[in-house]
Length: 51
Image 1 (cartoon, rainbow, N blue to C red):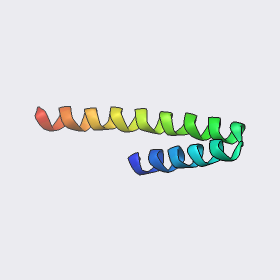
Image 2: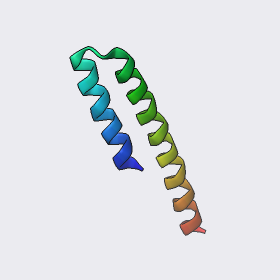
Image 3: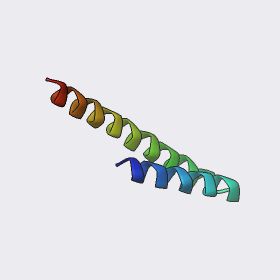
Image 4: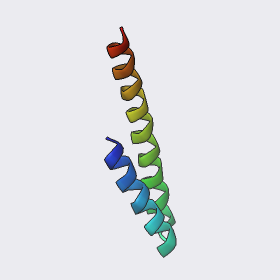
Protein backbone atom coordinates (compact mmCIF):
# COMPACT_ATOMS: atom_id res chain seq x y z
CA UNK A 1 0.00 0.00 0.00
CA UNK A 2 2.79 2.40 0.90
CA UNK A 3 4.54 1.47 -2.33
CA UNK A 4 1.51 2.52 -4.38
CA UNK A 5 1.26 5.80 -2.48
CA UNK A 6 4.88 6.58 -3.31
CA UNK A 7 4.34 5.63 -6.97
CA UNK A 8 1.40 8.01 -7.25
CA UNK A 9 3.42 10.73 -5.50
CA UNK A 10 6.20 10.38 -8.08
CA UNK A 11 3.63 10.46 -10.89
CA UNK A 12 2.15 13.64 -9.40
CA UNK A 13 5.55 15.33 -9.18
CA UNK A 14 6.49 14.42 -12.75
CA UNK A 15 3.09 15.52 -14.07
CA UNK A 16 3.36 18.82 -12.19
CA UNK A 17 6.82 19.47 -13.63
CA UNK A 18 5.50 18.82 -17.13
CA UNK A 19 2.51 21.11 -16.61
CA UNK A 20 -0.26 18.54 -16.39
CA UNK A 21 -1.97 20.06 -13.37
CA UNK A 22 -5.15 18.00 -13.56
CA UNK A 23 -3.29 14.71 -13.62
CA UNK A 24 -0.89 15.94 -10.93
CA UNK A 25 -3.73 16.92 -8.62
CA UNK A 26 -5.53 13.63 -9.07
CA UNK A 27 -2.37 11.58 -8.55
CA UNK A 28 -1.52 13.59 -5.43
CA UNK A 29 -5.03 13.05 -4.05
CA UNK A 30 -4.78 9.30 -4.67
CA UNK A 31 -1.37 9.23 -2.97
CA UNK A 32 -2.81 11.00 0.08
CA UNK A 33 -5.74 8.60 0.32
CA UNK A 34 -3.52 5.53 0.00
CA UNK A 35 -1.14 6.89 2.63
CA UNK A 36 -3.99 7.48 5.08
CA UNK A 37 -5.29 3.95 4.47
CA UNK A 38 -1.77 2.62 5.06
CA UNK A 39 -1.51 4.51 8.36
CA UNK A 40 -4.88 3.24 9.56
CA UNK A 41 -4.02 -0.36 8.70
CA UNK A 42 -0.60 -0.03 10.34
CA UNK A 43 -2.17 1.28 13.55
CA UNK A 44 -4.73 -1.51 13.57
CA UNK A 45 -1.99 -4.10 13.09
CA UNK A 46 0.10 -2.51 15.85
CA UNK A 47 -2.71 -2.50 18.39
CA UNK A 48 -3.83 -6.01 17.53
CA UNK A 49 -0.30 -7.31 18.19
CA UNK A 50 0.07 -5.30 21.38
CA UNK A 51 -3.04 -6.87 22.90
